[in-house]
Length: 155
View: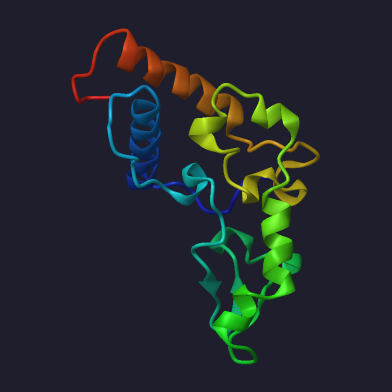
């Protein structure tokens, strides 16, 4: 089942720009670590989502999955919620990466992809982001552009 959030052209271009920047950094072309979307940063839960009723989730993509509800801001302080056992459960679930992903050549770029897209609720019984195969092909294309043809700023 694919996400109900279609990617806009602007978001698609941001993703390609982020991927290009991370690969350029990995190849030594960029000297500074680029600021990228959460899924390429290897960190999830830094952009909490607060619903109108006060419910808090670690990410906007997880609001329809009850087991990831962290709490309610009307009942507990934000500090208590992010220091609580539900947030620690979320972090432990996020950090469960299979050996297959750690051994992937592109793991340093994608960090396993979006946590939401690795969940059974989203991707069936697979443990990989459903964009994995397509992104690997894109990463190879970007790598060729960076290393084989030089950089002209139009990647």
